[in-house]
Length: 133
Length: 90
Image 1 (tube, one colour):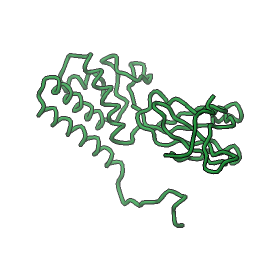
Image 2 (cartoon, rainbow over the protein chains, first blue to last red):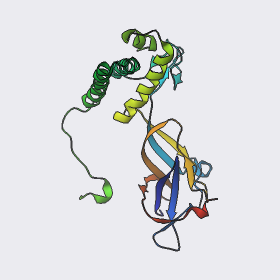
Image 3 (cartoon, rainbow over the protein chains, first blue to last red):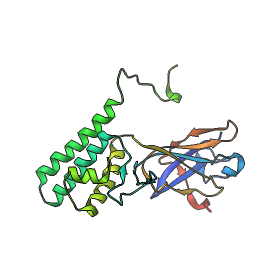
Image 4 (tube, each protein chain N blue to C red):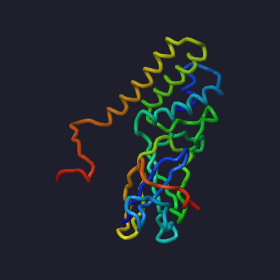
């Protein structure tokens, strides 16, 4: 496979490929890889997104719009959301001490949720091109 | 937990602000931990260098290109300060 790379250009993703004629020079892609060829699109982006909510009919929605909507997260993260909302209301009331307390609680709950999923020992494995096997 | 339960715990009856803060909190969580990974795909188009990110993206984790010979996605590296010129972009 030819050497592809990417860089960020404002709000866009720029994909380039090493030139066939000049070593070390990157040019715009000179061939298409589309889903029509074999069902797989040429670019795959892995990313994190907001888990959003679910409406009364259990359909996923991106923004809260009704009091009956359900947060699409674990209960511990939902409690963290409560602290976040408390923090923001305290900020709007100019109660900065309370704001700070609840923001710290929000972060603590989120980190604790993350840590509880990772029990046992851990092993660092370097990414494959640099690994000693 | 429902939005109403969140509002009762705060407590508040101001649903407009509460909805906005809940949306913000759910996005903020993704900046702190990797909880909700998603995958988006785009067609790679000849002579087209620039592509939009998925609108719902909070944090980008990786970019892969489909290797048509091996029939698998290969993760590509971010490049910095390379000899490149975007005049060839269509």
